[in-house]
Amino acid sequence: MACFIGSVGSIGRSSFATRSKTYNVRVSSAPTVTMMADRTFFVGGNWKCNGTKDSIRELIDQINEGPSIKDAPVEAVLGVPFPYMSMVSEKLRDDWQVSAQNCWTGDGGAFTGEVSVDMIADCGAEWIILGHSERRHLDVLKETDATIAAKAAYALGKGMKVMYCIGELLSEREAGETLAVCERQMQALKEAVSDYSNVVIAYEPVWAIGTGKVATPEQAQEVHEAVRSWIKENISSEVADSIRILYGGSVSPGNCDELSTKPDVDGFLVGGASLKPDFLKIVDSYKNKN
Image (cartoon, rainbow, N blue to C red; front, top):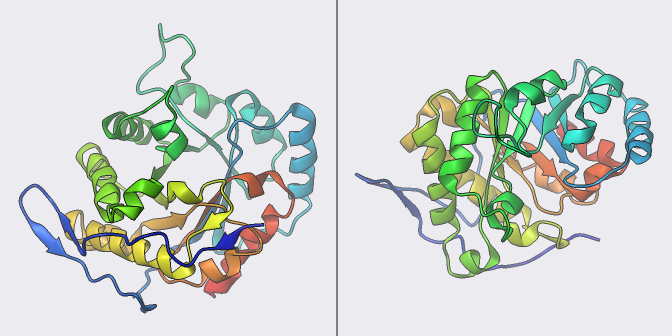
């Protein structure tokens, strides 16, 4: 069972620095009221390296039996392993969408084992998850900020939509470096991308992914508010108002309702819980925004 934790260090300095200027960011310890744009709630499921044909068919059948969200203010997207994207695209109800979990940095060719954006689109996916902590931090992968941003730019240029993941390790949070880490990861995206209309940001504190530890709603709001402030100062007010910032890290049916009430939490990127039929309950948490 996931549980909220009272404190895992501080998020760090109350300003974001760019190469030429430092901007102060108010980070309140109490809930604040954010002037919220018309941001459609978003729930992504990341199946990671899980599933078989049989288990996926069973799960899709259960999802397809859930209530329609066709006219609801929510998007639901499933991040599917490459071998199953076509099957899920064909069987999944049409008010849900399909995402890949990674892509190559450019066109296809002599790149053994890689999967191009064109291949992903051909399998029926509209989204790609990029920069997930497992891609950033697993010893055999260690994708850099620059590589992840290059993938995002290429995917967007090909007409895909991107879930761009950011977040700090436990050691970084305990050292008060949360904001510095998120800034660095966002800066890489800024240097590669100019159009954010098909981008959502997923803040995933690495210490909360798959551990059962969950940032408190106040901790999630604190970082989301700070990231949105950085976007306002470093990209534009328009992007800051419109871009959706998701929370990820042991999200479950038991904690999603409280998390979803926070003004800068625009949805979730869900791991293990998205492999179960009660993932529908997490999607249903969009109703807390109304």
